[in-house]
Image (cartoon, rainbow, N blue to C red; front, side):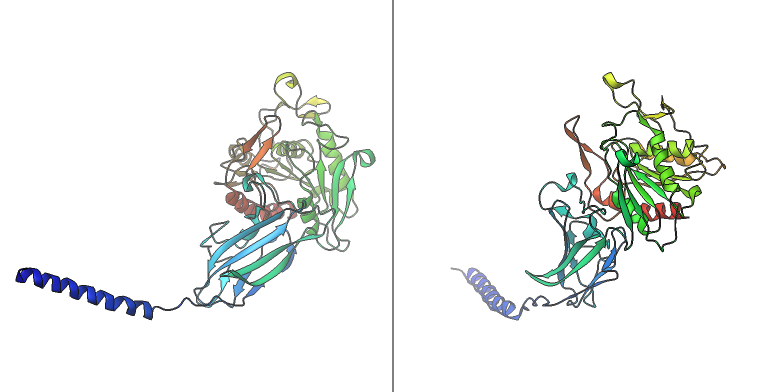
Length: 426
């Protein structure tokens, strides 16, 4: 071996010794992972609140920079468990503020104080095809949501929050076609509450009565409210065809005839196909209706069904079909407020809402629209409950995409609901 080769071997050997010397030293000087916090505190501004009210939730008592999981869980009316979670990093004070802090990961992806509520997912089934429904406000006064904090594998704090389905003192009764000429759920404010505008609410082509919670929320704020079924219930047609506008007018008169109610302030709120009826009532019954809220609206009326039933209209007035290329709004006494998502895939609710906002009422004042760029058809109703974005169409035997995203729909409802309350309560 030459002198040069010997020098190279000695150099490599020296480097190897140096590495062997350094490696154990590096391992010995590394810091051990700090133990997760053993305790935390959950602070909530309103541990008991109406189901449509936002909360401020903070977690304190953590190590600065510590990562924890904050989770929610609740049980729906069918006994199915739902849950949501977010992984958060505590700030320099050892706090996590759900309104301020974006989750590192979880069931939602931006700072949102109510993200743990609307992003809940069911234990069984697909989240996009499921809706969280608590017990009816006719049967229950509230439901619980459990908030828990986990550090590592251990739960270090939990707290149960109450979501009230109606305010204390709100009265209610069920109306039937046989006894009252109407199918509905009537909610009345507590006796001592000042009376706000009465409100008639109804849904769309799903039929039945799906807005009892919204009526209960309205009554909790002083509005006598009636959640109405106009088809798909006992004593009413089984399909959305030949539905007489006089049926809605009868429901409106029931509200305006209640003791202490201002009869000139009544508002109607309809979603999807029900938005047509809401607009028609405001146009043709300005003596009864002041304002109308049209959620995920259309601007025309449709035949009830294609094919053999094409001669049937969805709506009738004075026994005659109501078939309009554009529902007129020039006799409306108050305001039509349209609420729509621009990514609605069920129908053209966005352009319809914009059309409504371009037109004027009987006094020449423009109607209004609330537009949400990323939302779809699912913008109807009170906020902060988990909702899917697909519905099953039994006639077509397939799931239909409502458009938008769960998050965008949730944000749209959170923004629009207070504005609806402001309009009808003015």
